[in-house]
Length: 226
Image 1: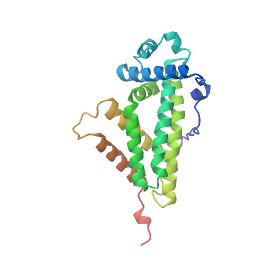
Image 2 (image 1 turned 60 degrees about the horizontal axis):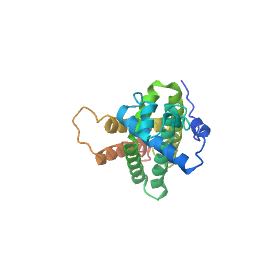
Image 3 (image 1 turned 90 degrees about the vertical axis):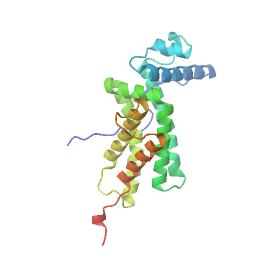
Image 4 (image 1 turned 180 degrees about the horizontal axis):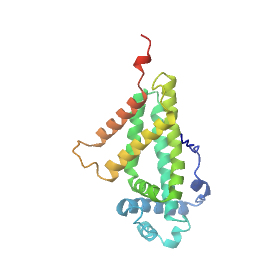
């Protein structure tokens, strides 16, 4: 049996190596490049986007770009880190407010869906780059590992309460995370499946949350005492 080790969460190598922008002007320029990249990736796709396109969109020079990022992939990683930080902060809030697990999961899924919609440009780039660029894929999977650990923790808590006996927490977390990410990519970035379906944001969130809840919060009735 092949065994994989999940990389523990923490700052990615890119985040650790990227110097903080010390001045307000520096931070504003950095933000301009990030916002421009998001727009260009959404419009052109990651592989078609050029650094010169991003610089032009930001109203900055190409030379200025290299004061902030070594490559287009480095900028994409910065955007992926931002997405992960925002999505994580929003996802954990419902669990801290004393909601039922089912209600908290639905709010968490809704937060992911909304964040994905707002940051669709960089996430299109993440999807494309992770398929073909090995170094980027490794860095993205390191970022993603934190989310897998958090979901696995929710599975373990459910198991301690008597739910979902016997399932592997990490593999379940990976499967649920992959479902969420790819469903969002298909319906938000690619215009949806080429089949007839009544679709809106509310239906999307309800569907994802229902599958998520039923994947974790079930009991083995056969094993229950009679």
